[in-house]
Length: 234
Image (tube, rainbow, N blue to C red):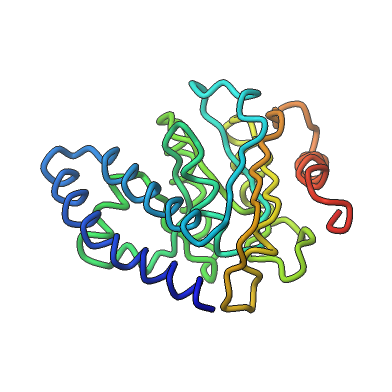
Protein backbone atom coordinates (compact mmCIF):
# COMPACT_ATOMS: atom_id res chain seq x y z
CA UNK A 1 0.00 0.00 0.00
CA UNK A 2 2.86 2.40 0.79
CA UNK A 3 4.21 2.05 -2.74
CA UNK A 4 0.80 2.84 -4.23
CA UNK A 5 0.49 5.91 -2.01
CA UNK A 6 4.03 7.00 -2.91
CA UNK A 7 3.30 6.58 -6.61
CA UNK A 8 0.08 8.58 -6.50
CA UNK A 9 1.75 11.27 -4.36
CA UNK A 10 4.63 11.56 -6.82
CA UNK A 11 2.33 11.81 -9.82
CA UNK A 12 0.27 14.47 -8.05
CA UNK A 13 3.31 16.51 -6.97
CA UNK A 14 5.08 16.22 -10.33
CA UNK A 15 1.88 17.04 -12.17
CA UNK A 16 1.90 20.64 -10.93
CA UNK A 17 5.19 21.77 -12.55
CA UNK A 18 4.33 19.75 -15.66
CA UNK A 19 1.01 21.59 -15.88
CA UNK A 20 2.54 25.02 -15.28
CA UNK A 21 5.38 24.66 -17.78
CA UNK A 22 3.70 22.34 -20.26
CA UNK A 23 0.37 24.13 -20.46
CA UNK A 24 2.06 27.54 -20.78
CA UNK A 25 4.28 26.31 -23.62
CA UNK A 26 1.40 24.52 -25.34
CA UNK A 27 -0.97 27.49 -25.27
CA UNK A 28 1.74 29.95 -26.33
CA UNK A 29 3.05 27.88 -29.25
CA UNK A 30 0.08 25.69 -30.12
CA UNK A 31 2.47 22.71 -29.95
CA UNK A 32 1.82 19.89 -27.52
CA UNK A 33 5.04 17.87 -27.86
CA UNK A 34 6.77 19.29 -24.75
CA UNK A 35 3.71 18.76 -22.55
CA UNK A 36 3.27 15.25 -23.93
CA UNK A 37 6.89 14.23 -23.30
CA UNK A 38 6.88 15.73 -19.82
CA UNK A 39 3.64 13.97 -18.88
CA UNK A 40 4.59 10.52 -20.16
CA UNK A 41 8.09 10.89 -18.68
CA UNK A 42 6.66 11.59 -15.24
CA UNK A 43 4.34 8.61 -15.63
CA UNK A 44 7.13 6.16 -16.42
CA UNK A 45 9.54 7.61 -13.84
CA UNK A 46 6.94 7.07 -11.12
CA UNK A 47 6.48 3.44 -12.15
CA UNK A 48 10.21 2.81 -11.99
CA UNK A 49 10.49 4.71 -8.72
CA UNK A 50 8.28 2.14 -6.94
CA UNK A 51 10.37 -0.78 -8.15
CA UNK A 52 8.71 -1.86 -11.40
CA UNK A 53 11.48 -2.53 -13.93
CA UNK A 54 10.35 -2.01 -17.51
CA UNK A 55 11.79 -3.96 -20.44
CA UNK A 56 10.84 -3.43 -24.10
CA UNK A 57 10.98 -6.29 -26.61
CA UNK A 58 10.39 -6.21 -30.37
CA UNK A 59 10.25 -2.46 -31.05
CA UNK A 60 12.86 -2.95 -33.78
CA UNK A 61 10.22 -4.83 -35.81
CA UNK A 62 8.35 -1.59 -36.48
CA UNK A 63 8.89 1.28 -38.90
CA UNK A 64 8.38 4.16 -36.49
CA UNK A 65 7.82 6.56 -39.37
CA UNK A 66 4.54 4.77 -40.11
CA UNK A 67 1.20 5.19 -38.40
CA UNK A 68 -0.17 2.30 -36.36
CA UNK A 69 -3.09 1.30 -34.17
CA UNK A 70 -1.53 -0.26 -31.08
CA UNK A 71 -3.75 -2.79 -29.31
CA UNK A 72 -2.67 -3.85 -25.84
CA UNK A 73 -3.94 -6.26 -23.22
CA UNK A 74 -5.14 -4.56 -20.05
CA UNK A 75 -4.64 -5.95 -16.54
CA UNK A 76 -3.46 -3.01 -14.42
CA UNK A 77 -3.61 0.74 -13.86
CA UNK A 78 0.13 0.65 -14.61
CA UNK A 79 -0.45 -0.28 -18.24
CA UNK A 80 -0.83 3.22 -19.80
CA UNK A 81 2.10 4.85 -17.91
CA UNK A 82 4.29 1.95 -19.00
CA UNK A 83 3.24 1.43 -22.63
CA UNK A 84 2.79 4.99 -23.89
CA UNK A 85 6.18 6.42 -22.79
CA UNK A 86 8.21 3.65 -24.48
CA UNK A 87 6.87 4.59 -27.93
CA UNK A 88 9.28 6.86 -29.83
CA UNK A 89 6.41 8.72 -31.50
CA UNK A 90 3.38 10.43 -30.02
CA UNK A 91 0.22 8.39 -29.72
CA UNK A 92 -3.39 9.36 -29.17
CA UNK A 93 -5.67 7.50 -26.77
CA UNK A 94 -9.38 7.38 -26.00
CA UNK A 95 -10.31 9.54 -22.99
CA UNK A 96 -13.56 9.87 -21.05
CA UNK A 97 -15.62 12.66 -22.56
CA UNK A 98 -16.16 14.33 -19.17
CA UNK A 99 -12.45 15.16 -18.84
CA UNK A 100 -12.64 17.41 -21.88
CA UNK A 101 -14.88 19.73 -19.86
CA UNK A 102 -12.07 20.44 -17.36
CA UNK A 103 -10.64 23.94 -18.02
CA UNK A 104 -7.12 23.96 -19.54
CA UNK A 105 -6.89 20.15 -19.41
CA UNK A 106 -9.62 19.74 -22.00
CA UNK A 107 -8.00 22.29 -24.28
CA UNK A 108 -4.60 20.61 -23.93
CA UNK A 109 -6.09 17.18 -24.69
CA UNK A 110 -7.75 18.59 -27.81
CA UNK A 111 -4.40 20.03 -28.96
CA UNK A 112 -2.85 16.62 -28.30
CA UNK A 113 -5.48 15.01 -30.58
CA UNK A 114 -6.81 12.77 -27.82
CA UNK A 115 -10.21 11.30 -28.63
CA UNK A 116 -13.23 11.86 -26.34
CA UNK A 117 -15.40 8.78 -25.84
CA UNK A 118 -18.75 8.12 -24.17
CA UNK A 119 -19.30 4.36 -23.95
CA UNK A 120 -22.86 4.77 -22.70
CA UNK A 121 -24.04 6.57 -25.82
CA UNK A 122 -24.01 4.68 -29.13
CA UNK A 123 -24.10 7.82 -31.32
CA UNK A 124 -21.29 9.38 -29.32
CA UNK A 125 -19.26 6.17 -29.62
CA UNK A 126 -19.66 6.26 -33.41
CA UNK A 127 -18.57 9.91 -33.45
CA UNK A 128 -15.52 8.91 -31.40
CA UNK A 129 -14.56 6.36 -34.05
CA UNK A 130 -14.81 9.04 -36.72
CA UNK A 131 -12.62 11.36 -34.65
CA UNK A 132 -10.10 8.56 -34.12
CA UNK A 133 -10.03 7.91 -37.88
CA UNK A 134 -9.23 11.60 -38.47
CA UNK A 135 -6.39 11.38 -35.94
CA UNK A 136 -4.91 8.37 -37.73
CA UNK A 137 -5.21 10.03 -41.11
CA UNK A 138 -3.26 13.00 -39.71
CA UNK A 139 -0.33 10.65 -39.05
CA UNK A 140 -0.69 10.25 -35.27
CA UNK A 141 -0.69 6.76 -33.78
CA UNK A 142 -3.59 5.49 -31.68
CA UNK A 143 -3.30 3.18 -28.66
CA UNK A 144 -6.36 1.25 -27.49
CA UNK A 145 -7.15 -1.49 -25.00
CA UNK A 146 -9.64 -3.66 -26.94
CA UNK A 147 -10.80 -5.52 -23.82
CA UNK A 148 -12.36 -2.24 -22.66
CA UNK A 149 -11.54 -2.84 -19.01
CA UNK A 150 -8.87 -4.45 -16.83
CA UNK A 151 -8.71 -8.20 -16.44
CA UNK A 152 -8.86 -9.37 -12.82
CA UNK A 153 -6.95 -12.61 -13.39
CA UNK A 154 -4.50 -11.70 -16.18
CA UNK A 155 -6.34 -13.70 -18.86
CA UNK A 156 -7.59 -11.91 -21.97
CA UNK A 157 -11.19 -10.72 -21.87
CA UNK A 158 -13.43 -10.59 -24.99
CA UNK A 159 -12.47 -7.81 -27.40
CA UNK A 160 -14.71 -4.89 -28.33
CA UNK A 161 -15.29 -4.61 -32.08
CA UNK A 162 -15.01 -0.82 -32.42
CA UNK A 163 -11.20 -0.63 -32.77
CA UNK A 164 -11.27 -3.31 -35.45
CA UNK A 165 -13.89 -1.46 -37.50
CA UNK A 166 -11.60 1.55 -37.21
CA UNK A 167 -8.61 -0.42 -38.52
CA UNK A 168 -10.64 -1.81 -41.42
CA UNK A 169 -12.02 1.61 -42.33
CA UNK A 170 -8.67 3.40 -42.31
CA UNK A 171 -6.45 0.55 -43.48
CA UNK A 172 -3.97 1.38 -40.71
CA UNK A 173 -1.93 -1.66 -39.56
CA UNK A 174 -2.58 -3.05 -36.09
CA UNK A 175 0.37 -3.70 -33.80
CA UNK A 176 -0.59 -6.13 -31.02
CA UNK A 177 1.21 -5.48 -27.74
CA UNK A 178 1.49 -7.97 -24.90
CA UNK A 179 2.12 -6.54 -21.46
CA UNK A 180 3.58 -9.07 -19.04
CA UNK A 181 4.00 -8.48 -15.33
CA UNK A 182 1.68 -5.55 -14.69
CA UNK A 183 -1.08 -7.85 -13.43
CA UNK A 184 1.22 -8.98 -10.63
CA UNK A 185 2.63 -5.48 -10.04
CA UNK A 186 -0.75 -3.81 -9.46
CA UNK A 187 -3.73 -6.18 -9.84
CA UNK A 188 -7.23 -4.90 -10.34
CA UNK A 189 -9.06 -4.71 -7.03
CA UNK A 190 -5.92 -4.18 -4.94
CA UNK A 191 -4.46 -0.94 -3.61
CA UNK A 192 -0.89 -2.19 -3.51
CA UNK A 193 1.99 -1.93 -5.96
CA UNK A 194 4.47 -4.81 -5.93
CA UNK A 195 8.02 -4.37 -7.27
CA UNK A 196 9.08 -6.63 -10.11
CA UNK A 197 9.56 -6.84 -13.88
CA UNK A 198 7.14 -5.60 -16.54
CA UNK A 199 7.75 -6.41 -20.18
CA UNK A 200 6.27 -4.63 -23.19
CA UNK A 201 6.27 -6.96 -26.22
CA UNK A 202 5.66 -5.39 -29.64
CA UNK A 203 4.46 -7.99 -32.16
CA UNK A 204 4.63 -7.87 -35.94
CA UNK A 205 2.07 -5.50 -37.53
CA UNK A 206 -1.14 -7.00 -38.89
CA UNK A 207 -2.66 -5.64 -42.10
CA UNK A 208 -6.46 -5.51 -41.68
CA UNK A 209 -6.90 -5.82 -45.46
CA UNK A 210 -5.46 -9.35 -45.28
CA UNK A 211 -8.56 -10.60 -43.45
CA UNK A 212 -11.97 -11.15 -45.01
CA UNK A 213 -14.00 -10.39 -41.90
CA UNK A 214 -13.93 -8.78 -38.47
CA UNK A 215 -13.96 -12.08 -36.62
CA UNK A 216 -10.87 -13.34 -38.41
CA UNK A 217 -9.03 -10.05 -37.77
CA UNK A 218 -9.99 -10.07 -34.10
CA UNK A 219 -8.81 -13.65 -33.69
CA UNK A 220 -5.48 -12.89 -35.40
CA UNK A 221 -4.81 -9.98 -33.07
CA UNK A 222 -5.95 -11.95 -30.04
CA UNK A 223 -3.76 -14.94 -30.90
CA UNK A 224 -0.67 -12.78 -31.40
CA UNK A 225 -1.31 -10.95 -28.14
CA UNK A 226 -1.92 -14.23 -26.32
CA UNK A 227 1.33 -15.71 -27.67
CA UNK A 228 3.34 -13.29 -25.52
CA UNK A 229 1.58 -14.16 -22.26
CA UNK A 230 3.02 -16.67 -19.78
CA UNK A 231 1.48 -20.13 -20.22
CA UNK A 232 -0.72 -19.80 -17.14
CA UNK A 233 -2.49 -16.76 -18.69
CA UNK A 234 -2.98 -18.01 -22.26
